Length: 567
Picture 1: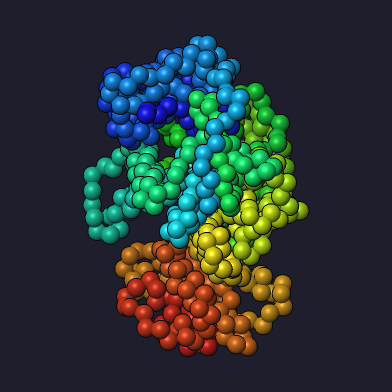
Picture 2: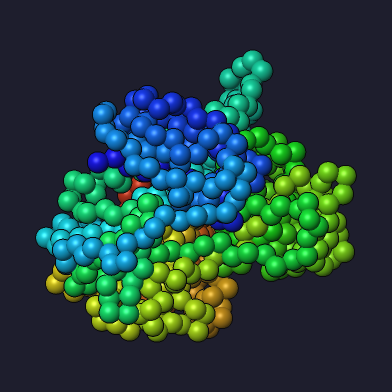
């Protein structure tokens, strides 16, 4: 049986897309990951890759036609297979109105599973695989793409762009390393193509992993009813009913919208939109100076875009150790990024072909594009009938086993309101799956690393110095600069330092904070040390290879006792 190709949701605010042109014709064999159709949404043209392998048997939407997201636009199947007729879901040319196909009055019921997982992001698919490894019969539901936001529109595509930005910086500074090249050229289209290939490859990898562990994957919009039954609506409007002994909710979050008066011509971009630009703008304003805003600022500044950041709080990255933020801010300013803290956007006009942001500080910023990165909110609609207990901030309340107020319903990932990180979702997934399959575990958050893929990188685990002061903890601080590291000097990357906070009574490591080269990799050593409750002395006595960047951690740990050697 074949598969429907759906109009993808390429942006958080996207409701329809326009078919620009088909890159394959009926009868053509299509490989998975091959470009299939070019789509326009909000004036951005994107090539959509095929999620399936087979023959393009039918096209439901012709060039110039406007189609709602998730509506079928084509059908891919086996040679000789007859494609279904879906005239009812084809909107009139140029129309955004969606006409859904008829839905069966009574959905068919599938066999009961041991576990149903709603959402196939880094929490959901990990939970499904772990439970299957433990012998459970698992069904996994996903309305969009396997891998969730992280793989498709978050962690992975942004890190691909970060890597391209780093490569571009290296090329531009190669003369400092004794490498003289000709005129370098940035090909933005190839940067985007590489990003899309990385995402596609990893998505296919997730699909193979699920198949390997015999996880049943059901694509469609899942809704959990009050009795615990799960009804899934497919792309063709047909419904299927599933039941399971236990349920894991992993529906994730969506971007918060910005409420600010805007001129009609103003278009506010989401992070989804900014990932799929067909060309680089000359200038970009980013509203929000958290991790997402800072990372995108570094990416686009590296490619020559004039970037401005507007942040409500007194400093960027409010939850990060102040010394790291101060050092990073200085580097960003040196890179040409304008930073406006203690400021809000009061209004956005449109003048002379540019967006004009009017700030609470009375400053005005002109930018070709405006991106909003002001946080995310939980997606709870799929299971609102369960009436689960929520926290005061609107997230699902869970215990240390990841159970909700309904003991057979577990919840993981961003909707728990804990730390909205992919690796936290995966860790919660393992805890939930183990508890469901009879292996009791509890979730701990004392050694969760955080990473900012800025330039230079930031990474941290444990408490900040500000938090230590607020809690009246007796502590010591030691720092070791990368300028004193032989490896960092050889690399030509001497910005930054390692900072360790330890309890002055028992030498317990309370926090490790790194700004500098490979910080996001180096933090793993600190996470293991804190997980094993190592002291600063024990960390300092561990032999570190020379010359490596990790020696900076050893030296900072030795510095707690005043015994650092190279500073």
